[in-house]
Length: 259
Image (cartoon, rainbow, N blue to C red; front, side):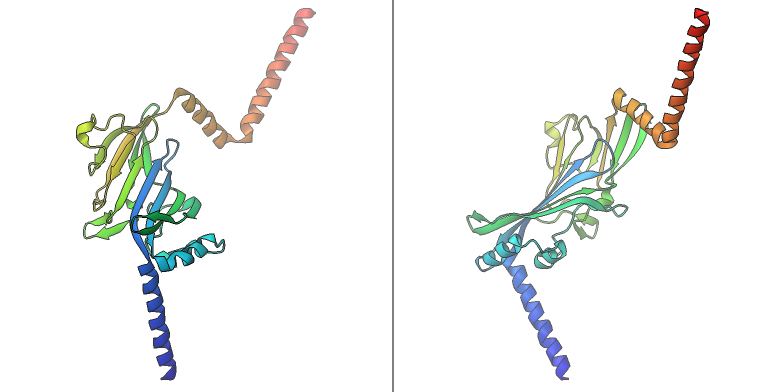
């Protein structure tokens, strides 16, 4: 009975501490930027989370920020489930991860800080070749790791999703229509390099399809790369044998001519 009472007291204290921590750090907004690659199906992602820090938490935040021993999981305990990668493919993890809690900034209603997560997400798009040197990419809507509603994934309040298109990309279709740029100010998003969606946007039926045309130089390099990948060092051995045979043939022809 005594052990049960102690356990209840400890649980209540833990809940009180967690409640105080959540009250001292308030999430003010989330900006997720996805930079699509023009070489493969991965993407560079930057999650920027803005938080408000109460006056009695300034010293604690400063101490945590200067501590080099705090892991991401420990920061997640402090800030809650909002501190996660918001672009995460079920068929691939993330790499080149970097987490940076920013300095405290003075605002009109207290102090704020920006928490930045930078990483490379795999399998953000799928690709198929539709014509010589022309490739069609489709965005995977199952990579979204935002909030959820009855319809599926949805952007939360004060949340912005921005997708930076690869250089030379031609958008074929996009849904839902971006909040920026507005369709009336574009020619069916022709030559559009950036698309943004704001809070409360449903993402369960999200689609983004675009094409990229590979340069002739890239196609030639890809051809020889594929050959090397398939044949490996045997390719160099074969080329070496061909060169030796050619040199020997020329030498013999020259020798015969001189005689």
